[in-house]
Length: 474
Picture 1: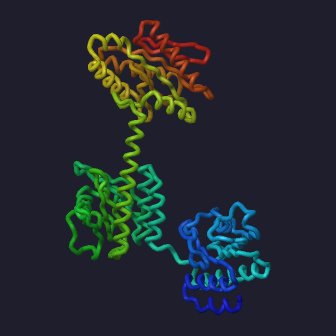
Picture 2 (picture 1 turned 90 degrees about the horizontal axis):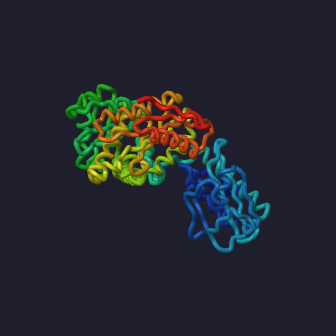
Picture 3 (picture 1 turned 120 degrees about the vertical axis):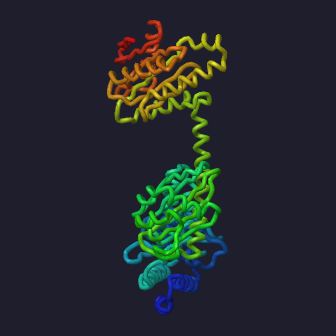
């Protein structure tokens, strides 16, 4: 068999023909053979005999075939019923042998055979010899065939479908686009309902050029794709071009392609560019990129909707601040921060009396004003929460007790200077190394109680876990 197979393989002029030749030779021995080659992180069936239905696109470590590829070691199941990795594809299978394929020293795939009887040692040697002969022929033919643009796009589409983060989606879309065409750079734009054009992400040598392109140039590109059409370079620089495009050409974008798709009331635009002139896309590439842009639009729409739901679920509807559960989640996460974190608990003084005398509508308006004032009073990266009816909290990154105390004073002063009809009482505690959430909260609450006992409208810092406090003069 091996000699005849060698003759047949030498006549095979492509990898697919070589794989089929091996399968036919092994099938003639009464075996159920298949050949899988890795492509895009999955094992793709190249040839098979004796099955009505097969598995394709198998992941490494899946079944005998995937495990053989993942480990690079032969798998010989003399009794498939005794092995948990066996995946049934046909009735009556008794034994299975899977041999890795190495091309130029690298794992490229597997040759797999099953049988409804025991596989003898002589047959096993023939399978191994067939795998070696196939690997040699694949190597002589230049290696396994590369992914086609459509196959690459399908691989990226699977990843996109699982993504829920907008930034991750943007990066994946750009990677997919640049895999599919010979252009080297790409960018994603969002055209908002007010016609403002926002560059969102970019990749490649011309990333800076695309992100910093003048609005006039971006509007020219958007004008080509707003109606749903695509646009790409067909001539050399200097030939007729739309108004505003000269600046992009002058910055090095000698070839350009653009595609658009809507997301709600926003237009997503994919731009691809290259420093080389006259790189013209063919019809198949254009259609693939149109599909990719539509997929990007759908994925972004889903991610945005999910983010909005997450924000709603974590937000106090009256003030727009994080609510009680969000505060505790953030406090728990802050335990991993490298620096010091201060917890501020803030009560609105005499809010019930204000609410009773002025009415609930006025009370709601006051709470919204206070939320705005407190949020503006903290630094970027610090957060304010509404954790109860008239209770707020803040998590601040500080350098120590003194800075935490000063931050509390700034918030108290900000409320006083805003013209608010009420004052606030603030208790402060800085989390000690290894201190639990309940402990630091209890210390901040203890400090707040001291303020209230002193007549409200003040700030107190709990300095240590032993209960020492220092009141801030106001």
